[in-house]
Length: 206
Length: 216
Image 1 (tube, rainbow over the protein chains, first blue to last red):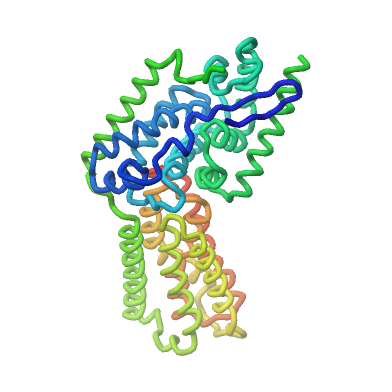
Image 2 (image 1 turned 90 degrees about the vertical axis):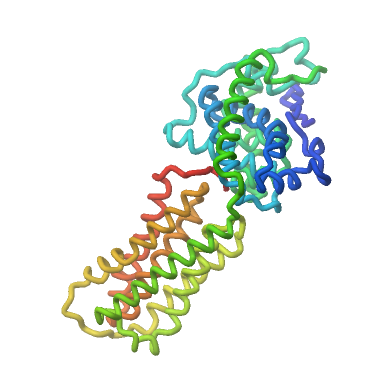
């Protein structure tokens, strides 16, 4: 759980998945499953798919802001995952690697589309990504406002905030996923939080 | 406090998307049941590019364009260019290997300096300067096509594309070292300039060509 305070509004981000949810050792660890998958084991692929596909779909939906495109990109992500599995090296971890594929797919799609955001926002869906420990139950507008504010961030900041706060990636994992250094990933996320504070302060004043 | 589940409300559509992606991935897995390790791609790329360079040198020597007796005086830049090609191709394709990529970049700078040093004065040639740059680019076309083929197998960053382009351009640079004896200003414009153009073309083409996978 991560908490950010925006004036009187305390927003709690509940990561969709935590690294502690994934076994580090044993037959169900990412690396053990990946080794079996590289040998052609479909069951190992199925476990990895069930572990990561739902989170990746949510990430892609929020990153590209276009549901149909996100669904296509999920397919692209897993086709790349299968085709390029021989490129996986375990130093950064599978979670960072598979998020890197999804983030590459998202950035590539946005670049080819030639825009940063075209789709109208879907506040109900966006609001689902965030919760507020004090106010969300009584005032769901807070969660919705945070969701909308997230969508107003520049893609590189939104990407860092989404991966770190909502998807529970550590900064070293975020750095691998976005293809930068740990320091640069922290700066992007920090700038994203600063921008969120400004946006939410304006919302609160209104 | 209840934990929000973003899948709520549209679970049906999400499930269909997940099933579709899973089916496509399983079909791909059935087509290619065993993974191809990255080092096999790196090694095959390296062998093909080195073989192309050897073929270019062989044809050049046969046509008396490449003068092998220049080897004695130009061994250092040639050695550096071979290192640029070998380390550059491998570092551009291998996952991770940040240090190796920086090493390859340093080798490329050293090779460029070594090419320019010792070119004071230089020989006079009846051929126009662009004959060298044109033949440099022409010789680099096959290595360029080869590195682009391998770059498409993953999501190549700008640094990797640039490095692969420099490694491809090393073929023309080696041929230039053994065929042209002109001064440093000619080498800077028509040889190193042509190599830089190939490296930039590699970056641009790798961005235009759709990658086969988006793996880092």
